[in-house]
Image (cartoon, rainbow, N blue to C red; front, side, top):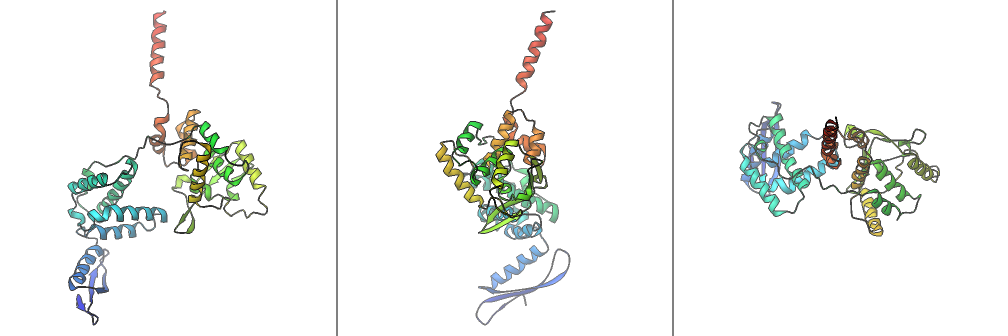
Length: 356
């Protein structure tokens, strides 16, 4: 009895199905308003259960997140879910996976770009969510035609308009804080180490080796729906040890000496990421410098190192990038061109030949 009417007038669906492993199972669901809804539920559920690519995209999304359950961090999952629900499901949700065409994707791109004032990097993030769904369907569930492969990606992940401060701008900003205060030290660590804000807010006394002048990055902090969460860093490469300049070690040591019997495994900076952002905004106004985000202090650190002639591989290790490509794709344009040096070298060689 696939669909039957209950005494209260609603419809129920009860049926056997075969899941993707070949196992025979039974499913029961109540409270449908009509018989058609109950039958439609059965049909779509059976497609999803055996991962049939004629299932609707909105149902494949459920399978996708189930498969990625142990891979995605809570925050990443929330962000992906929001983008998919807000910008993919309304357009593609009712379409079968194997019927979505390259033309459909182009139409979606045009709609998203014309209806929203999104940055190039956010457009690329939306595109990546759609591509991830189809790539997973192709690799794991045998989708024969991946339409994302035939469409030019919208947006641009290579954002060359990086926001960062010069050392002069940072000096104006940091001078608005009381020297030796917790707030002063937080921004000193961010600027002079280039660590991420979540990595800063997860720091404990156990992570700081004053004798060896090293900072151990092994976790990250964020607040999600009112709950404080400490988890492993962004990537395996984010677990790293950073050498600290002597002046910063002295600042940290001076601050730690003020903390009487402070637990060595407690967070040193017990504020949220949002509170840190608001604090920065207030002091930007006081300093009269251009507005940047907390994360842009990481860019500022990198720009300063580049200006000092530090090579990309060293910066990669310090920032905890996955590979050198990430560093070069993000910051490569900040390095001065070597082409002028080559031209000057050739001029000098030609001049020497002429003097012979």
